[in-house]
Amino acid sequence: MSSDGVVSLALPFRGTWLVRNSPARRLPSHGTRLFATTYAIDFVPVRGRRTATVRDWRTVLDTEPPERFVGFGQPVLAPGAGTVVAVLDGEPDHEARRSQVALLPYALTQAARIRGGPAAIAGNHVVLELADGGAFVLLAHLRQGSVRVSPGRPVAEGEPLGTCGNSGNSTQPHVHLQAMDGPDAARASALPVEFRSYRILRSRGAPVAVARGIPGESQVVEPV
Image (tube, rainbow, N blue to C red):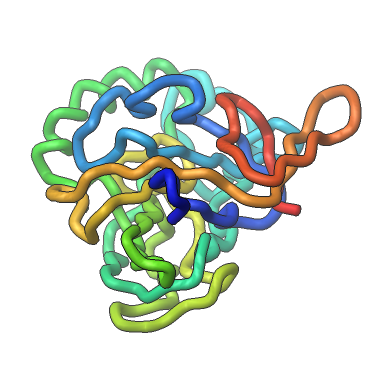
């Protein structure tokens, strides 16, 4: 953690990912301060700017299998060196939802998921205590059965933790990341984050290199 209280991390993936719910756009980034999510950020794997390889009638009218999304099963990496303090890896991966028809009933059940607490929102997840002290990082919505670490295990930055899934409070495969001052999201306070050594891909022109920063909403980023 830096002297100004910002948690400095590596991007927890390889390849190109789309930024959603960025704290650079608004605070709290997800519209709530519940469960230490004030500075949380979401990353959605993309090919080009597309999140899925198929678009058909189900995209418009129904749910879709998570396997058709390019991110499903992509490796999720430790964003810093530390020790695993908590793991959950038994929640199912839901059908994905891009259709407004499918999203409406999902939105109506949001309150029930919140009542289920942090685990119901995060789905399969890993919590790391960073080696430099004072901060914990939660990576959520992992694929069922993919988590490769257990509590008490030390991990190096960049080490695989699991793979991208669609568990918990998720409408399509993505990774949710947040930093906290304690391991329990129900009791911890949120901490701001920044990411090191990445670049922003643009539809025109050369990529923009960023030494340290927080990606903006709808930017496509990749680690350097």
